[in-house]
Length: 284
Image 1 (cartoon, rainbow, N blue to C red):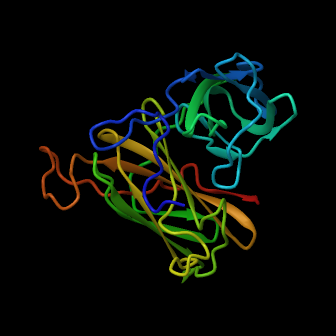
Image 2 (image 1 turned 90 degrees about the vertical axis):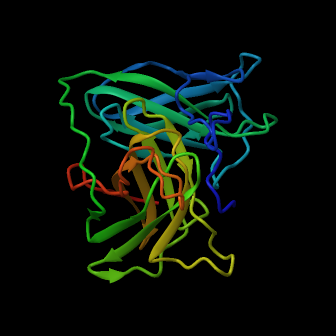
Image 3 (image 1 turned 180 degrees about the vertical axis):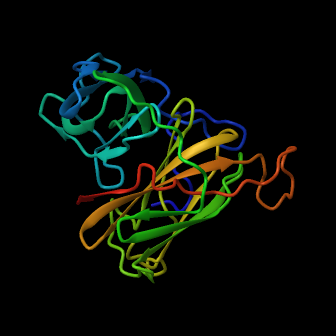
């Protein structure tokens, strides 16, 4: 596994950073199709497929981070984040259960079709019926609580140039030094840009069993922002056989690490969400 930022799966080069993925429903001949874009609230089974350039459902995928496809769901107000791994039947139809609240949701399929040569992320909207209660974007801070766990974020998300983000995990005030591998790493990070939910998918530096990467309490990532603005970070980590998600709001500044220049803006530190949405735990 690379120690650097995974290529953001838009497939285009920007000025020092690839353009984010997830903004398109169809790209390079591949299309994300939902069985229905209109859903009910509560626990719902979502059925979808990825069709290829020949118009048929794709059935052959290259595993990435131990899975053939990663499915991310989030409401457009940035609440309700879920990271799931659907099941595919022989025809290429995928299904997974989601917990949905009323509003407009964005679904992402993160995958690497065999023979294509690079991973990609496609996104599609779905509407969930019911009375919509939009939530404000959580405030910028540096620490978030996830049950008995406290996760602290250090670092600065800068434009174009890669910068290091380090998460430190504690449980009941004590550093956690026995994190368990999850998706081939000690942490898994998804970043979504506020406003359009542009999708960045990153993994930490190093990997379990490489002889140098410790199982906590720190998890280090390398990332670069495609634009200034606010981002939501969703950190999955596994401890005591449960995967938990720590969520942060981050402001990306116009600085380049080590340059001392801010393009007219003051440096803005990375930060977490307050316990507005809180974290969630789920069994791996």
